[in-house]
Length: 280
Length: 291
Image (cartoon, rainbow over all chains, first blue to last red; front, side, top):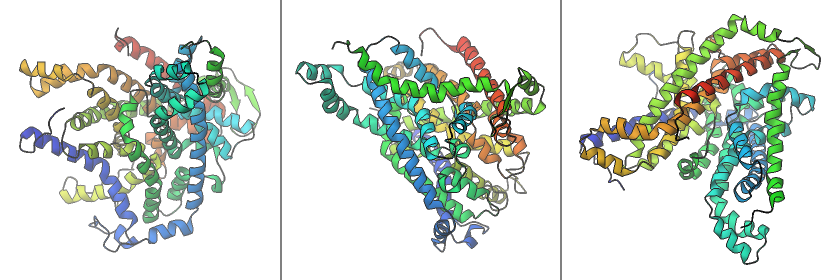
């Protein structure tokens, strides 16, 4: 364990200064978003700008809810992302269990296929994907989005869960099996509780990926009432005159769920990445 | 434990494999097939045209322009992400008060929706009311506000925003590896009288070699195929032509000119460039010890 650097030494001061610069660099844009979203219109365009709102207002939020379909987009995002997480996790948990607990022909080939699929970027598949979805008559449905996210998140969820399962000692299961428990019981009572943190972390990464997506919604969804937040807010932004206060309040509301989830799983991130916790 | 239950093993992985094949591998294959057709994005009719899509693309100056912009964008953002990311990882690997807070905060840009990142920065870089221009003029660095979304500066803005959004990925990967460097190595270097810089170049960097190999590979693939950041920034500024990278060009061909055949051709070429790049990259840098 290294000792905490002291503020007295030059080295210590350099470290604290660098850390401060990094925090300002990354956090200031968020602070500015929050500050702008609580400012009345007059203060938003004032020069020199105020760092904090002088007359704190919720008018931007009121306009967002009254004049736009923000709530609908929000519900759609929650629905689509949750379904994607549910399907991905069922498939990935079963798959990862199989890859770590069974030896069968082609197992390593399957693992490399998954790693290969993990590197795919959306733009490489959206064009043929779109043509196929139209052929199937699924264009402009939430089902198409859920399919797309499940397929797209599956490789990295599998990869991540596989490493979580690998870290659970196989002896525990063997002991349960020799004690006469069936495999199903062994999974329910031994593996799942131990893998639970990994499953939660993987679910949250999947959720964030689906929640943040723009391109699949842009391409697959045309009706306004089916749009999710990313495209909804991007379209508000591109509509005629930009209402910065309203846009900022909307951006803030989209970001909040992600940041809450993120703070929750942050401690798994650094441990998990070794196996590909994040993508994009 | 006996691994005799092969069937169960296959059954459990089968649904995932089927889905990956049906929704990822098959579309990519179908895209290769489509690239030999003249195909409208909406209507079902299609006509086999052989290689003429490829010939059209390769003789089109817009294509070469987009390859150039894409290369400029990927190379500069990757280099900067690595520098900023390794620096940030070095800082948060030290023990200081508030370290966990700093570690959490610097990862924020990576987890927020790209749409939000772009809107935030468009507001900060707004030429009339943006804070950045206000500060630059107030401090006296420039005399007139900079038109960040204009044709001269939009690539710079795009690079700044992308580095801001994606450097946390480098921090995450590099930090995980840094934590596993045996402290003994640093102590030995100290005994030998190595300076802080010496220790970085002779101990830290060689230990990071493998993780940087993977990070650069993944970042190259993902920056070269980055669509949403580039596309969203280009909207509504009038200078979209100056950051039209290959993914944006493929998207426009398919969804604005409705040429799904040509769009697929571009996606296939993009894929080909990446495969070529990956092969060369592995040949040049992969060492015996493996990754």
